[in-house]
Image 1 (cartoon, chains in turn cyan, yellow):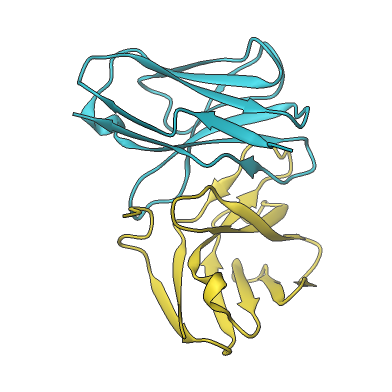
Image 2 (image 1 turned 30 degrees about the vertical axis):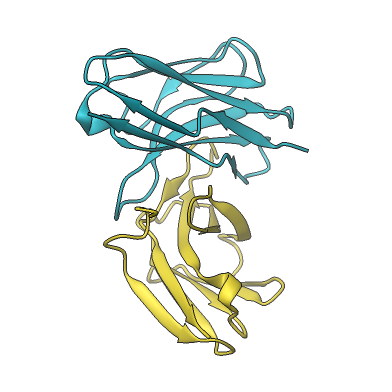
Length: 111
Length: 112
């Protein structure tokens, strides 16, 4: 059982480039989340979704967009990458039982 | 190397000793609390949870204590092993369960 899968695992971008991070879960979970994790800080919620076709802003949504066209996938987009978006990005999903299951992370560097 | 553990409070313990990791939460209305373990290069993993109507819950080698009066949560690990070395952080969840609020974490180093 794969659980939560994030692609890619690593990426280096130049300032101004765009990219999409993909999160896929095979647990039929309703809720999905995107977080960023920076040194010395806790996970900060970027955007989340409570079901297919829905998205909502989290704590730090600026500079990011998301889409949840299929229940199993949650995409995070950076339209014009900035060095401040260098971070480790984690996707998580939850079936409503209060436990979030996390992917292995995507390490993004913006030069 | 993994940058997650930089600038975090660090707890160093000897293998076989018990470890106590603390967390202060901010919202007195939080209804549910979870401890996560994050090993280097990996995503967070669920360890144990506790509801606000409880003050103690035990798992395998782990115990979580909740003190709502001072808004404090602790994770106790018995007979700490090298495999327990990781960053541990707590999460508080309000009653609607839509969002989790994570602490910044404590790095646990287990010395053989």
